[in-house]
Image (cartoon, rainbow, N blue to C red; front, side):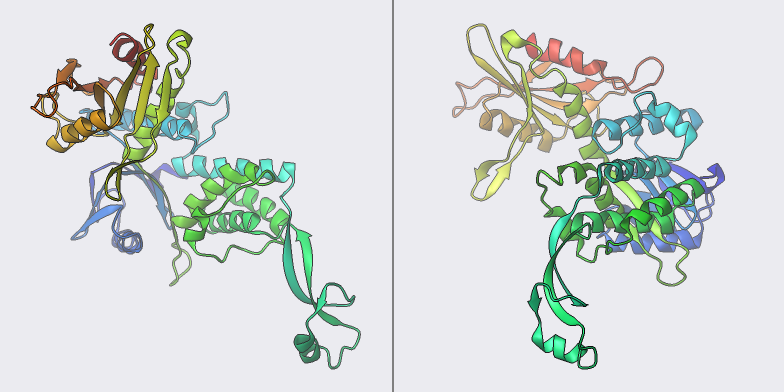
Length: 422
């Protein structure tokens, strides 16, 4: 993808018609795309689009718009763009959305290919793996006109189709082949990539792969059915590829007027991506402190009031030498705040989490810009909670090292200093 065809913006940034090669057609196409998705991606103004918390990449015709995360106060120049491109790739990789080669770093990848191409290459690699293993086969019912009587003769259709052809039989029978919903979903995603990608290399690879799907029908079901798809022992190897395919199919908007200006979007909610990234970094220390049985886990929903439930992002716990279980609640917040000014709703949320999950300490976990970690502050007690001492700490994690590379060092410091030695 040519750099001249790529527009780079940051989350919550505004893009006006006439800026950076963004013209009226691109604006109209994105308005249509946003409407199809309930307005969740952009805020639409007069000839301008303001991006929300979704990051990633979308392609309108041959124009690619790259939406990057950003929490620092540095100017949005080339250095800042490169820093956040690499950070986004690393977060996507940690969250399981991308697979880079073991010797391939995020910074190397982004200099070689666009973010869209990297994602599509990830999907192509998954398809190559499945083809090598052999596409899964399933039993299915098939109705067709055959020269041999097999299965159940469908008399009405047999008479309708074979008054002249006495040598044929219209039957319903069982077939064991690759034409099943798992392969159909992958084929539909490959068709979309072939129609949308401007990379000759990607188009060639996809065309070669589609040869193996020649006997497979494209997916015709609704997108909601994809979320209900289950996997068994034979199909569990498909989970990664199906996850990638769902994102491609769900964010594809065909151009019915000319057929040359489709929209393909690969967008991720930055709040959820940050939560997943922090969890994966902390999870690496699960069980490492064997004497204290350190546990880092996601929390299932817990009933709160009537049919309403609450669910914190992360629960960390360990046993003291006296066999007392200490629990901590961590709730990630992808936003920049003043170290003295958390929102009332966030503080009230953590108050409830402490009581519901038996935690004496909770953390509102933010990315650091220039804030300082000042430690725990206790909630004021009331007559009702006079015997309960608990508090909340605003924790600001340094996500980057001295070379502006995304670093996981904060996870070790947080576990040691704020959990085990709390």
